[in-house]
Length: 325
Image (cartoon, rainbow, N blue to C red):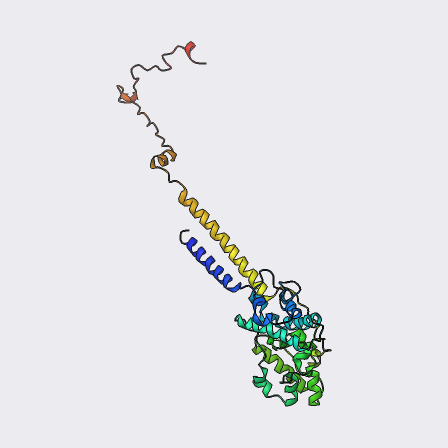
């Protein structure tokens, strides 16, 4: 018990230190690029958790950077900001002010050592090996409407989380673009190759899509979704789950440590019994009276017979009337 208690305390303090390190409150409201934005933009990026980006991502109070800047939420951030800013500022979803809002969000996360991974497919070897007609549809500097990411609803800073969102990828029209520009059928080899490049790139970025089988390219095609339509988001985010798991673990260990401490203190404070009390409490000794040895004497024939001790009375000496009834 004496060794267990310090171990539990050390483990609890270690987990609490990790939790305190991870729980850095969101402070984008003090971020200079944020302060330079119009009020309609700021209300979408941060409004204290009221119909803003942090609430859309699903971060609960206390709202921390690790949830706000999780790369899994990058696609949600792009979709939400493009639609929210367009509505709040009465503009279109492809306006510069929308791009600026996404850039502020990305810059804030990068400044807090939680950068949103951006697309680097231009340097990806499989991408570079594709024909120009394929590369222009998947990624090119102009980022026009034939490019995959704008048709998926992604916005600058063009993050991997949006490009590698499986739901959005199915709604992008870039693979129809591949068929059109390359003069190939939508279920042809070039379209399938383009899908494979997309899949491989996302896997290398740690955001794998569902594998694409050859000849099934049309299964991933669909009508391009309007950029302001937000994707559905079910369940808790990774950051929220991690926070709950860490908090629960700390609570359990703290409870165990407290219980161990109480038991340890009770054992220390319990008085030790005196030796005399221990003897008193011990089982009583029983002294049995030894059996009396029968005294005999020999008669004339040498046969031993009992000797009647002086002062004793036997039943032979008591008259029959006096015998007890």
